[in-house]
Image 1 (cartoon, rainbow, N blue to C red):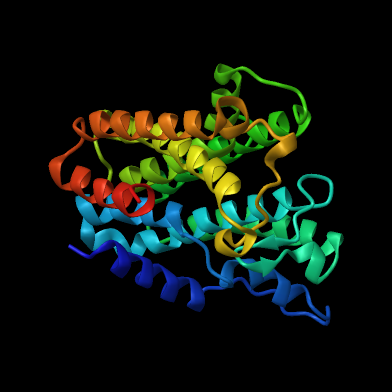
Image 2: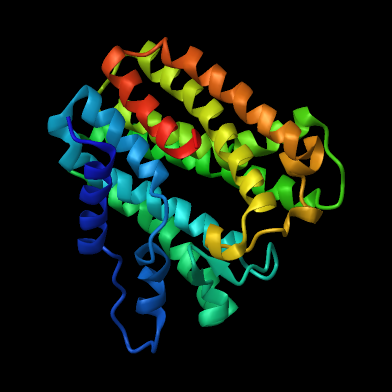
Length: 287
């Protein structure tokens, strides 16, 4: 079985060879289109999807790369729009100037729009059966859209400087962050045509993993410099974050609680898949 790093390397090579193109006489749109994809990132969501496929049906990993790229494009679009002046107005992302800083706000909006739609193009043209691709598109559209990431972002922006309860904060981040992570795992299961029980267990694991990812991100914002994090930090004062609501110590306790809950969820999965996902959790969160 390929290691996490080998899967990441495989994905990075695939991404480099399949960056989106839009050849025209526009002076910078094509460069901007691929820029935020090409500067790096954790590649957390593609790794989750590919790890599921590697654990269940490794011969399908090459086919799944097209879908993993679509997921990464969807995630990158969300970051580009999240950083816009009308939202977080962030100057830095992935250690790189944001697109509205490097170019202009119009370019950033249109690049985000393009990556959103091109994500579905990548999936629609993946070497996978049409029946499975319809399910993949449906899941991604739902969890990245009005019942997922977009709804979460709308709540996040509207309730700046308005205190939420822990339950409301969890609802926000289940939608804004966790559902796309859960979808990434479930899409891997769909590609492998896994049984419904396995698919649903993976999705539930992904929701908890997504909340853990957000708690970790809030802790990073409170404890690391912008240079260390590769994006602006110390800027969550107006946001409803786990650190703001629970304090740093409380957020760290929430992280430990979620790690224990993830171990319980892992016990519901196939042993090989559980071991693979546990290695990712350990790499990303247990340090």
